[in-house]
Every structure is written in C-alpha cells, then in structure tokens.
Image (cartoon, rainbow, N blue to C red; front, side):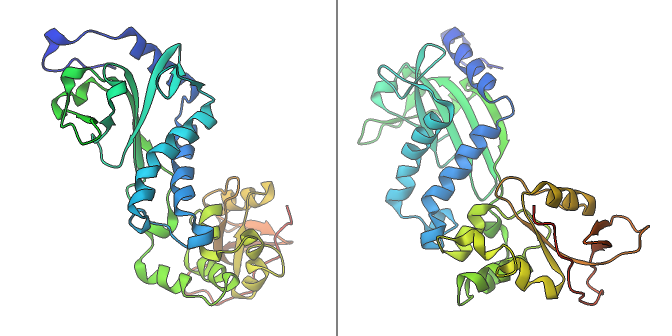
Length: 308
C-alpha cells in the first residue's frame, strides 16, 4: 500500500507505479524467486568453490560495487524482463531502472532515472533479510548528489516507496552463522574430503546448501565428497552419522525424524541411534528403527541409507 509523504500536496498517486508493483507481485507471489536470485548472487560473487570465501567483508571493493550490476543481470534472466527503451527493464509496459543498495535507504539514483520508476532492492547476508519496492524517483525527493551525479532518496521521502516485499527472508548462509572456532576447525582440514567430513560432523540438523559444500570442499567435484561409500556418507557411517540429500526417501526420513527437509541440492546430517518400534519420533531405515541420538548415547554405526 502506498503511503502519502508529509508534503502530501506535492504527491500524485502513480498508476504506472501501481501496475509495475502488481506485475512484480504476480510474477513472484511469495518472493521465493527474488530471494533465490539474491542468494545466488551473493554466492556467485563469493565464488567459494575457488576462493573459500563466504562473507561480504571478504570481497574487494570493486566486487561489492559490481554486486548491483550482477543483481540487475540476474533478475532479468530469472524473470525474463524485456529490455527497457532507456532504462534497465520494461515491466507492465513501463521503463524501470533496477537499483541495489548495500544499506537500507542508500539507493543511488542516476541522472537518467530522475522522474522515472525504480525497482529498489536491499539484502543483508548477515541478517538473512531482503526487501524489494518500487518508487517514482521524483527530482524533489532526491538529494546528496555525488561525483557521478547520482542522488539518494531523502529519508523523509522513503515512505513513498511501494513495498512489494517489505520483509523477505534470505536463505541462510550457514558458514556465516557458525561460531568462528567451528569454521576454523572445518576449513583447517588438509583436503576437500576432510573439510567436508568436518562440516558434516560439526553442523548437524541444519540445511547445508550445495554452495556451502562447494565452499568447504573447494573442488570441482565437490558433491562427490558427500556421496556413497567413497565419500563422507560412507566415511561417517561408523560414527553414527547419516547424510540425507534431496532424494524423496531421504526427505521422508528427515521429516519423520523432525529434521529440516533437504530441498534440491541440499544436505542435512544427523547422528542416529537404534530406537524401539514405539519410540517417537523414529523411522525405519535399512530394516530397523532409528531415532536422533542424544549426547549420552554411545556411538552406533549408522544404517545404510536408500540410494535415492
């Protein structure tokens, strides 16, 4: 809902803005696609499989600056926006400029977008949050011009933004939210295979995305470090640890044990212990019942998981 600013006499409801906002909501009703673009763009710039990076402060200044350009490109690819005549996109028949800011309210509006519609994006990997809105960048609401003649939206006019998603959730960057000692332990492994084993031991009961595994393994065939008898799944079985993937039967096991259900490319690990048939929650794996292990439970070799 659009809220009139303090200088309401200068405010003119904008039907083009409303149509663009409606088109964006229609293309992504729950915000999942936009959230995925943002998550993927962070991971793309970290380039963890080659660099081992996973934090914003590990990026160079030029890379941070490039983030906005990459978001613009990735949003167009994901939503197949038409190319604008003068600005980045054409949405619902109107030219729209795409702007990303590293700080809330810090969007820089270039001269060519003055008076035009702007799609505004903000995301924080640390807070696992993002926002998206649309605004008409009226010249009277802009101030603080820099050397490139770009201006920010004055704070008192931020309430002119029509929020398409005022509070979106970004998929968690697991490594970023671990204690520093745990990350050091994981990343100090002497090989990709050892680092992945340490990851699966240390981070149990949480979703590990494909990118987290890539960042830890730092190898082109990183997913192989999880699979089968020659990967972490086989190596950690004697320690009672199961490694669940995106397969349907793995998802059913995760759900039965009360674990997060791994989606496409995801992994969830947990230590398990033999259960009585009437114990809950428990699940049958490889012909017998299992439950999540308690700290006091001795180590029992984990069952063999279904292959798919």
